[in-house]
View 1 (cartoon, rainbow, N blue to C red):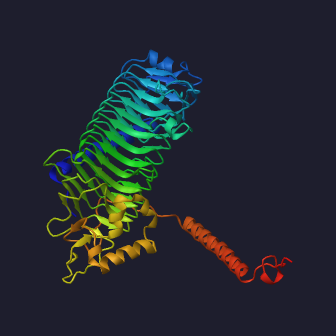
View 2 (view 1 turned 135 degrees about the vertical axis):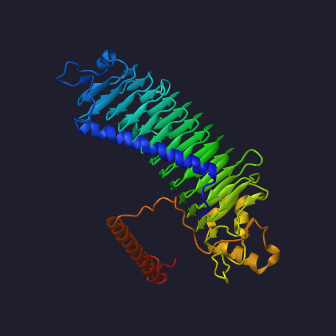
View 3 (view 1 turned 90 degrees about the vertical axis):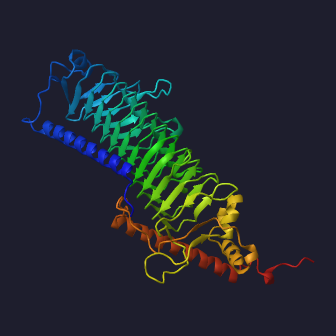
Length: 496
């Protein structure tokens, strides 16, 4: 496995150090809440039996730097925090908007919200009703649960903020009418770590450079994640599964996409990863499994003398492994494992692939349908991997033929092309040094294993379905051999 280039390694180590410091800080704060000896005393306390019973009342009385402890209870939404305070929830306090407006609006820098359940925001897209809306720098949003909210957490010109260990679920409406689980707008150097945001519309970052997005589960959304005009982002160790589109990056530079699970994304025009006008993308150690299209590349890189690198990824069981526009150039693919995709590489439109690097230093990629050999035992095939299947070439001009993939018709077409060289299609691409076995990347996320009970249930279900189908087929066969008297020729009445 090739190491990170120096620029990527520096950014990766810097991001890891920053996250470690953040984690230690949050862990210390959590310990302080449970250990009175560590806890800094609350400047203001809100509870049903206290002098202060309302959160907004406490904020209005607080000074910058104060710590407000909210001990349980259900509190109304519409809270405005215009001072640099820490709002700490103990005993599961709830902020309930009862279907109206934004629940918490932060307008002061350096505000912390920790340990709350926020629910029932309004549903106005015009007003962008939100669970937590931040309009100032350095917010810390940790360990909260947001339920039935239009927009979940919205950083709007809030650079240097932290969103960590929150759970966000959307209003139960049609996906097009939901808001974004996490939205970041013109907010540089934010960290989004360890969150779960599901069943919403998008997780989106616009015009926000230097973002670190790690260890999140962004599943069952429209866009699992969408980056636009956001340079120097690190997207690492996230789950982006069962969305229409897993991750789409547009008009951005120097984006590291490392160690993510990007699977089961199957919208009509969707897929795992999309790159549109992206320069210096570094895509390493991800799993692209069972997507409509694993990776789609459009005009990336957009500038000359820039290279996008795809290293050590597993691209398996997709309808199309990688789809590229004919004008795509300067992409390098090394040590990737292409396994049982219906079509490993697809060319979207007329033309041919040029300027694509499939091997360096005598090593290329693994192709599950490679038919060569390795006589010297060095792990690299002695013959190049050549993509020249006639049926795949026909798919480029006739996508509707994909219905016949792996059918006797497609096999017959490819057999005829091999038997009669005059039918042989133009070579699509060639990997001069194909690998004989997949190369595991240290960044690959673990494979999600089905539980034993689930595997047993699936097996029993399969046996039951097979049994029902077999009985049905046997009955049909018996009917065809022994027709009823109403249709038997000897019982037909001959007209006089």
